[in-house]
Length: 319
Image (cartoon, rainbow, N blue to C red; front, side, top):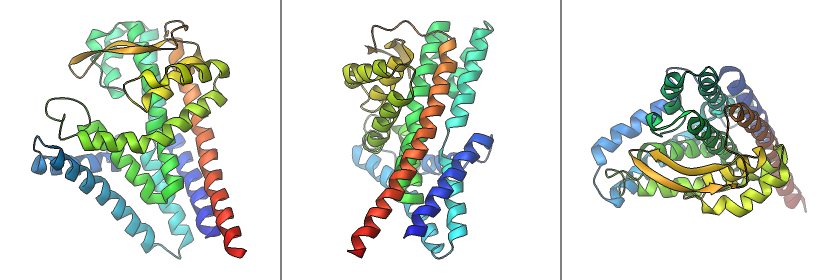
């Protein structure tokens, strides 16, 4: 058991390093392959009914997790192979480096005054209508996306990896991908995507709270981050994006939230850290740096937590 936990720690660190060095491939990404399979199953199962949507979520996420569990089990007794599997899976499910790259691309276009280029790149980060946004609004959208995806694309995955190993990593990424595909409130997915959206809310809860807590630790304004998290985190319509975006807003001293155009509709969201200034282009780079610090702390925290849990179980068995 000690070797299993140490092997996970080694594999997680290697996978995290792999994401730093290689990021996501342009083609052939495993998550994209899962998305294609989930889309094909959706075309067969879709009905305007919650039950069919729940079946879709269970088959997709459960099937991916079961496959990962079988593969991990097949490598029992082969520590180097299990470390390699963990490293490859962590690399595949993390998206922190790609997140920073896309955010900086939009920031660079905004700095150069090329709003058309910024609008072209913004959909790589979020689903908002870029044509409805000016420069400051796009800067706000990027910062909010960096905050939310720090939890979704990095911290949440590391939490579930520490809890469930390779199956936990795969299950979390599968659930998160399904939510992005069918979890929004469009007429087609209001019922069919309900289960995927609720499952994603549940899976994202621990990672979002850890992200907010680590933002307080790593942010330039710790008191501001803690104050905004507690005051405004619950006002956001998303139970997981709220604490993360609020803590980022407080840490960076900026104001997030408000009106946005998303998925063909206009939403009026509560303001987060209302005492802060409006976000500027330079806050994009600050948000990316904060995201990186939070991600490194999340790796250290989750690995340490898994090793400590293993030590406690070993101590309990020796008594």
